[in-house]
Image (tube, rainbow, N blue to C red; front, side):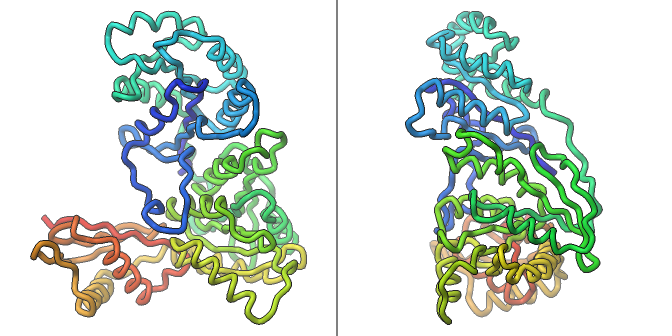
Length: 436
């Protein structure tokens, strides 16, 4: 299910990032604790009253040497393109400014639902100052305090009223949905075109449920697929070319709707920080992952070149140790036919459910081989493990003290599970819970 997107927009120094961090809360990313990925904080997940949504902090979109008003306009345009609902942040201590009115004019033209928030209203006496903000034309303003967390509940209640209706999944569960993600110019579209050109049955091109994405259903060797193409990657204009962070925003929508994500790298350019950011979101979203190194035909090679590149990927993407790697050329169509069997295998592994008795045999053997850690004379006891979900495979480990489940021991148990069961290409989640 695709999560709705909220964007926080406003002129500088109104507290956009403070509000963003308050709404996101103390969420700890799975990727964040693993070396090898740089997390970009302009886009994150949050939840309110049990419903998940994504949120964009446009204050984190750096447009370099662009003039002041041009930056505001560009950041607002990115938010307008991506968001289902926009939170317009102003500063209650400074009143309505010319820059606020400039942002308001841009938002008028968006035709998107707007919720006006007056930040830095830290005490009740200041609430009389909010009436001037009715002049911006967005209805009732919501007084809030990002630094103290006041009024955010009422603000989010109003945001939720404006969310679009949830889309039901329109494809049969046997259809494998996959997407190609990566930085601009790594060759995603070339791979897509080469793949579609080889298909014996191309069903149709239809508009997807996600804005600016194109779903291409087709069949190959008896298996039905839907290729989710992030058409917005090809969007025109300097705004989108001036910041690579934008590619993360586009990729997120495709990631959420995919069973398997193909992380595309450019063999000529090597690995960049943005590659790790985008792959990190796919990992965190729990999707099956295949690393595709494109433009392999353009590299001068000897018998050591491929192994050296694989080693570099493993060192740079430590959190993707489970993901297979394939080297292809969209130009020459080298190894492109290998992609579909690998996508099939990853999809099957992503949905694999393990019998509890076999799972517990593996866990108990692992504990016997490497006893659980001790802390202050007390040992972590593992009583029972059960699988509670697929896509990704998720396991609950019942223990005496969940806080004693150290990251390193959790990784040890994960490795033993991977050795025993075919989970190539899919992340797996381990959750420690106290046995009642």
